[in-house]
Length: 114
Length: 117
Image (cartoon, rainbow over all chains, first blue to last red; front, side, top):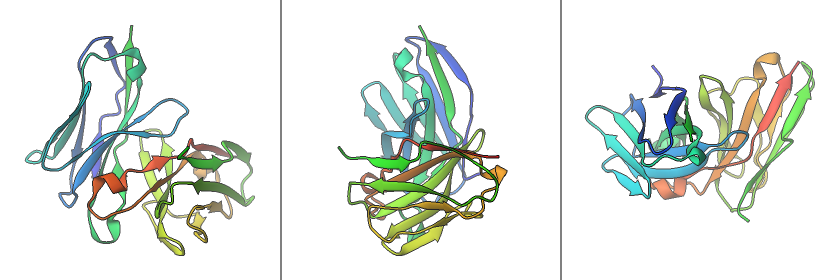
């Protein structure tokens, strides 16, 4: 079982929709989660991070963590065509020699059509 | 401008011909890492370095070498490339700092698309 599982999609939604992107994880020895966005032919860029104990909101984006079910989510409100990209979840902070390491999910391809 | 620079962006080579992909960062980051990205498999770590002269294997290190002689540079070396190393490669760097998420945000280069024939 992969440490981080993510539905690769693709996911297609109309402009203005609320998008829910999800990941599950199997190892509790970590401290934080990150969401990266990757546009076509570009490197991933950080969207936001959250610690395992809480949620975070940044504009139209909200990251949530459910420790009991080992589930992390990214919600996008009022989605725009410019949100079309691949979204990658990652976990990190396992400690010891794993400090600094991020373990990524497979990525979800999102298309927001006008 | 803070950035991670990879070269080349595109590379086509033949089996067995040694190649090097360069990576340089200008943010004085301690932690650097190489990933490969394949459809359905996501980003997988090849090698990482926590500081100068300190490198270690990631999840898929077979067939790759790295070195970290200077803080800013972290080249990826394929001594004898094979077709299964055809992939999209990313270099990334971060400050590095235990359980502090902000210090472990990784900044990625634009990627190197490698084809091994």
